[in-house]
Image (tube, rainbow, N blue to C red; front, side, top):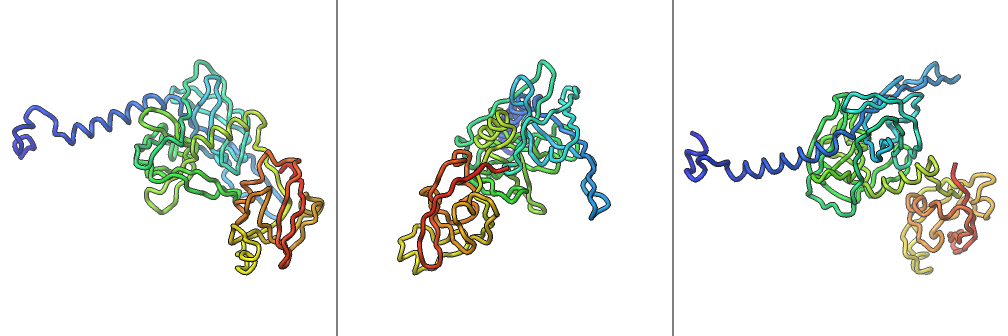
Length: 334
C-alpha cells in the first residue's frame, strides 16, 4: 500500500519528511558545488632514507592525501603528515589539471602545511569562523579517501574544543569532532558548512571506532597558515627541559596558596639552554611562567609562544619546600 493511499492529503504531494530530506540534500549539494572545484588530490614521492642500523626504511615510497585551494594565486592547505618527507609533490585538480606543488611552510605540531601550485584561473574557497559553529549543525567532508577522487560525506558537528595529540607528541587544541566519515586519503581536505565555508581541516579518525573523526578548527588554521606563509614555519620559544606532570603536595599548595594542584617536575635540563643559564635544576617543579600558573607540560608548551622569544620572564619553581622565582630568557625553538 502506498503512502498516499494511507493519507489522502498527500496525494500529488511529497510527504513532509520527504520535503525536509530534499532540503537537506539541496543544502549539501549547494555546498559541494561551491567547494569541490577547489579540493585537490596531493600525491607525493618520498626519498628512501637509509641508515647504518637498518637496511631501509619501512615508509612507503609514495602516498596521497587531500587539500584545498584557499587563495586565487594557488596556495593550498593540507596536513603536515600528508607532505611529510616528500621529495616531490603533484597536485591534481578535479578538472583534470595536474601541477607540481612547492612546499611553502610546514608545522608538524599543528599538522598543517601550505603548498603552492601554478595555473590560472584557479577555483578557491574561503575560511569561515569556527567560533560561530554549533554542536549539531551539518558538517560536510570532501576529500580523496583511498584515491577515490572528490568523495563527499556528511554528518554533524559532534563536539567542539576537543584536544588531540599531534604525531610530534604536542597537544593540539580547539579540535572539531564530527561524525562525517573520514578514511585514509581524506587528510587535509576541508570540513565545510552548508553555506560552503571551510570550518576545519580534516586530520584524523579513531579506528576501529565509528563516527569519531576530527578536524583542525578554521580559526587555528587561519593563524598558523599566515605564519607559514610569512616564515615557512611557526616560531616558538623553548626552555630546554625534559619534564613530566606531577601532583603538588597539598600542604605546599595550602601554604603558598597556589592556584594549581599540579606542576612540571624537571627531569633533566639541557646543557647550554635557557633553563640551564637561568639556574633551573633537576628536581625543581615549575608552577608558574610569566605570571601564568603551569599545571603540566602541555600548559607550558602553550605559554612558550613566539612572543616569549628573547624576553626575560619570571619562572616560579618549588625547590624542595621552598618557592623560588628565577628569570629565564626563552630562546627560539629550532
